[in-house]
Image 1 (cartoon, helix red, strand yellow):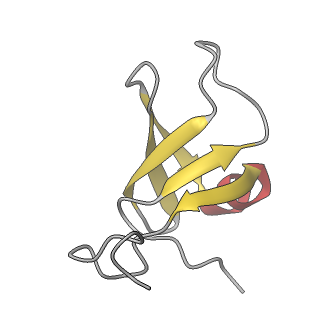
Image 2 (cartoon, rainbow, N blue to C red; image 1 turned 90 degrees about the vertical axis):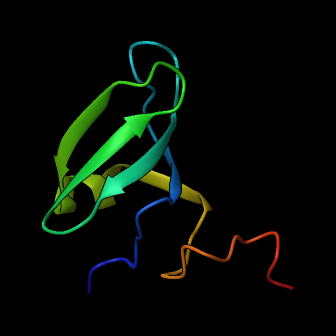
Length: 74
């Protein structure tokens, strides 16, 4: 079963980007994901299967509701 990931989620990957950043923002979801490095701004397309293997942790999840941030939910 695929992971529930949403546009705006912040992901921590197992391996770092060549710039040294390991945190990525999800820009597009589907069979392929577009993610952007939060350190240098470089964006890449990654297949869902590879992305799910590379994720170490979801740091911030939009949870399908872009109007609500995790800090507001308690």
